[in-house]
Image 1 (cartoon, rainbow, N blue to C red):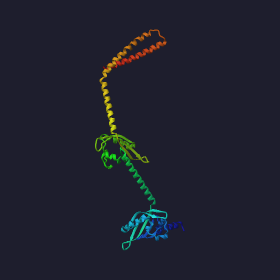
Image 2 (cartoon, one colour; image 1 turned 90 degrees about the vertical axis):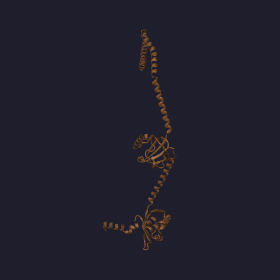
Image 3 (cartoon, rainbow, N blue to C red; image 1 turned 90 degrees about the horizontal axis):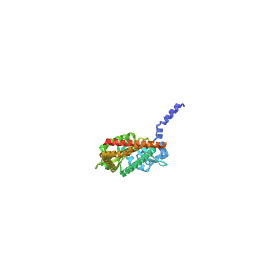
Image 4 (tube, helix red, strand yellow; image 1 turned 180 degrees about the horizontal axis):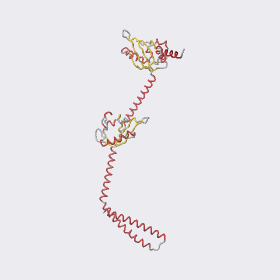
Length: 352
């Protein structure tokens, strides 16, 4: 027999309806209106470790765990009678070593009296899918627990805490924010709500720069509460990045520094007033200072002039080489001192 003939023969065997039914990648079975098993394919029997000779002894409920059996009697049978089908019903079927998770799809057929006569069903094994779903549910519960803990912690902190998406839309605020601005939900917050008008443009400029560069935002701003006068806050926003370095969220806080800012401004204005007063005093007394400087410069210049007059007389005396050098240094020092005094006199005279 030629190879092509063998291939065609094998193809015909593998596509035979009986072979397809018995060895399909899903379980297939048929049972009557009472649940008694009529036919079950090899695939499902292998999953359940069920000998072929026992099929006629069992009902569909016998294949299910206890909870599945109750569910079949209470819900699946009425649905088959009412609608004639059920889709993707999650069940657990018993095996010799435990259970497997499956999805049941079934179609019911009625007799001439209009009563349910027979059910053809398919069973899809979803153990891996079930495990994945359970992992997702666990991760969801963990995430929700972490969220509750974060919200609890943020509500115990006296500062205002908030988070924002990368585009700047706020998606969480703690109770301090709600109480300060008098809102109940995050969605009730409006853009730039509570920020004093004079501080908005600078804050928007800094926020845009931080959003583009991913750098931390720090800025002092005035916020107006629902009731009362504006107060000073330090607004801080820090980016949170995922493993790829992409910003997923912004964590922000607003810390009240109103008392510190008021004290800082009071000190600034006090220092400015002190400097202004000192400048005014100096301006008012500059003439007196000039007269004093001129008077003292004349008092100093008189002995300097005497020294300059006596030094030439010493030069006429017989001195050693060392003595002449000392006398020359003394003459130069006296001349420098005379120049300094002359400059003082000249500047003082110009101010009078």
